[in-house]
Length: 315
Image (tube, rainbow, N blue to C red; front, side, top):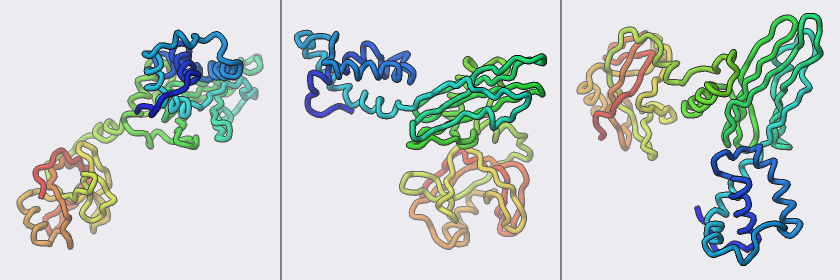
């Protein structure tokens, strides 16, 4: 994205200053840097930008560069406003629970407060809480918390979603790209005693033993976005290489429905015996299936695990 028109001299100088001294968007930039330098930038503006390069030194190349980065930096400043605060007001009792060591989010101030510190030393030891920011992105902040007291302790993870409002979200709501980023960061930033928050989705699903693995076929609809959808319920979307899991039960009580023979499946679809109506666009999809199965007199099979692996043809 590029800014339209020309920016003012003052704007260009401030942008240049931030690029050179604050490093917004460059290597090493962090929210801590932004919050540390932001008041100083405001001070410079309010006092006439003292100490910055003079007009005669702001040549054409610098001004053009500033114009190109104006919108980029503005967007970064607008989105990088989450402040992470550390408090040493940790629980000081001989016993406390997970809830007492929880991070706190404040949507009014757009801040996250974590506890980190030690309580009063006693004959048995010192209670304490250790909070570590494992990953801090524009979308999610991942926090590991460990705590200890007289009777033991524990550890847990919290994930704060930054999407307008701050909110805690569970690990299971994160996609594999975000999970991988957190796991990579945990390898170098988490305490040595920290447990990992979980696995990738694909490892959860494909890591189980594949009993009675076999190949079968589905016909899926194709929506306007090019996604594979269920012929029975267009809200259900299938993705290649993503495992779908639902316990197969008799009497159409659950499971994913497939057919063992692709030619027979196409005949059923074209004759209208598979579903009442045909999709505007459809695809014959090859699937890997395993787990508990339920066979029906029509020839279809209800399976517990169904992973689409390829599109054989579209029609």
